[in-house]
Length: 161
Image (cartoon, rainbow, N blue to C red; front, side, top):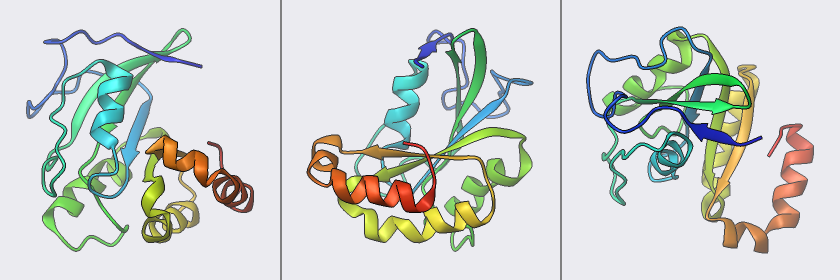
């Protein structure tokens, strides 16, 4: 199924505090380490223009947008990067608010396929917490080279791609 744009530019909360464009909608929360591609995925899914940069600390706020799968609307929440469910920084504390304070339909764990080994401990923490989880691999050309490893990992973890 394809997630389509329902939140035109100017109508959502990109960079605005105290704004909930999808209030009451089922939530899709994007989680992952810094620079994994979460903001790029939010931009793709919602048509937003969240700033995407290649240096730590870029997304230190929670960004929100809306999207549609079939005939159902969802709120999409982009969190700052985190490596663990145990926060070590203010960014990670901000990231975790949507994890525990919002009723979430599904979590999309965004993984940089070039750095799987470093990211898997967070994947295991999410699975152990019983969050509804889908793994999203970014840097796809590299993922094609490691498709056997990724398919084996998905089968062992019992999660969807």
